[in-house]
Length: 543
Image 1 (cartoon, helix red, strand yellow):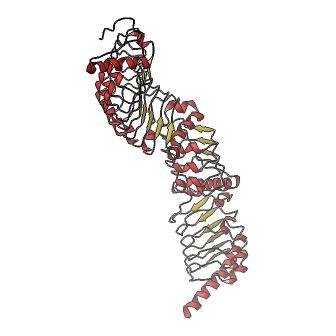
Image 2 (cartoon, helix red, strand yellow):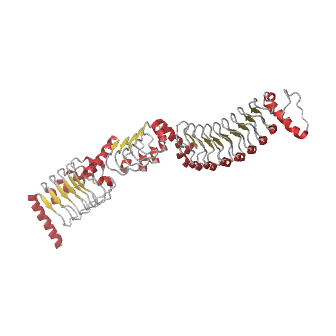
Image 3 (tube, rainbow, N blue to C red):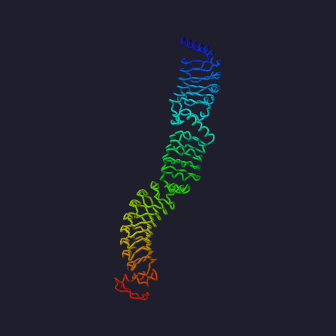
């Protein structure tokens, strides 16, 4: 057409003039292809192809060996021709307002490039290799949806962007990435794709969370994230089974995840400068071995339904276990715990609870919720009272309360019909409640070294009792009803204060005591009593 002819003439005229000036401007010419005549213009230093319809630069571009500045803005480019790498003299390249979805590899090979404009394209990430472009000092990237590098890096300008990309590029080759002090807000996803990494350092950033994708770094042996804003380490960190060193100093962590217990090779864990309360400070101060032991007990609950925190010198109950409702067996023995937390009420499947050798002065009422409890041991503590709600534990089989400061037992103790053993030695008990007669399943009653002067007659209803130990009590009489305990085989007591039975009977042992009490008890109904040949030294005063 006449218009096309005019356009061609205009192009030819501009190319003719460019042979003298070295600058060719073919902008706005409606070009869909680069004119082949351009290839012969080897002395050209500047070329403008803006506002055309170019989809790709043809091989004809390869002849422009002297080209220093190239602008192909406002076109429809989706890629560059491989021959583009031959433009070794190029210093400035503008590809704004095109349809590039990735940065062409040909650009990275332009080692002399100083300025690059890629704004208003469809880019989502920059390749790490761009960080190796030695002379690049200026990049325009706005109006793209770039996710890598992260936004906080891109906002800091070209130098920081290129340093970041170089860190990724070099790190991938060395399997060690150092991206310290980039003001990162989270662990970049592109880092998590470097699955061969053995060392990762992202110190002195603003990272609040390590993304779950950190689990992809299964070969990682060293993780440094000091000086960030971390509020927690994700449970997915469990996948990093090869970790040897973790440095998370000076963050905002309040807990160390129990998943670290699965890292059998972990030798160094630095968590200084964090407000950590789990594990407690004394465990942290004790070092890596004690920390891992503490975490291990929490970690194994999911498989064993057991946890043993014995001997860790804990000042507080490890409340982390209270979220594990599946827990069945828990020991916090040999610590320094002074309070039983109300949160313990969530452990509704607990069957065995050991609080031995702590500093408890009372039992929390929340224990009433532990309906599945079968064994409760709170020996060697400082208990002064036993709360009545203990009677709610109707499935209890063994109750151990020795070595405390108990002066009395609540009457509700009698509702523990399933109880088989009760240990009350070394307390300050002056009496036992009559309700003890309700313990019809009891076979062992150990009450050494208390202040008992008498036993309630109702003890005679504990018909399954086989062992009764009352040594170290100032008893002066045993109730005749004990004679009803036909299964009792072992009974120990001090005879020094006893008047009933007589001392000479007690000295002969349990069988003689039981025979004597049984005969005297039956005589109340039969009105006949035969104590011949039982070895009495004097007439029994109780008769």
